[in-house]
Figure 1 (tube, rainbow, N blue to C red):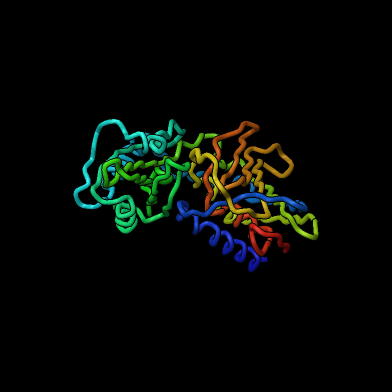
Figure 2: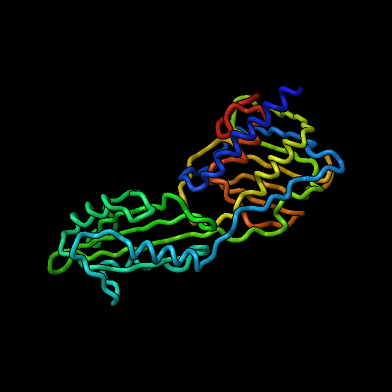
Length: 320
């Protein structure tokens, strides 16, 4: 039994460590064919024991995100001799400047003229990402007759409280030679978490369920009594930031979704329910009331739950 507990703690350590790298481009989706429900009832904190109440990482603000977005635009790298203008954006670039209002996102933009051709500007910008960013991609986009060349840079590390940042450069041929350049920076921040969506000391039992696709549907139930397991699983959820509004995204298909239910005791009404969703999100319900979703792009909750269940992989069909 002692060795088994140490194994579970090691699995949780492995799941928790990647959480420090949240801003990687990992995304999770859910695909279901044949469904397998695996439930685990876990008595995690003995009566009277103090439970973890770790607070999540700091949230950000529109002001912080806007400052960074403006800084990214100010430091866009263009060929020598390019000149910035403050007037209206040229019509050919206007569709790429009209982003609109998006929750949890700040936007800044500026435009330039350059004596270099659009292709030369694209090559230069691709080779000189803005400070603190890395080249993310590029190509030709737009409808026929309105096509422009795009170059994108992404933040390498987002400052505390900010979720992500991207600098998009759009380049069109000028009417009298040279090129027109629009730079648009978007920066998302973490909204604040609600006070209700933390695992609190009185939530001493947890039920972990996984729904996966597999050829051998079955139910497996396991019980743990280690306070250390309780502290690490609750600390995992309590340490996640609230998810910003990501908008439509493409997500890699996986074959398992997890649900973690905390209660005061086995069989008691749930105090908090956390369920993995598409694209690395975690939906949270506290005492029957929906809370802001959490951000778990590395899949730490899925990995921890899979480890407790003895699954070989958290995202593909497997069994203990």
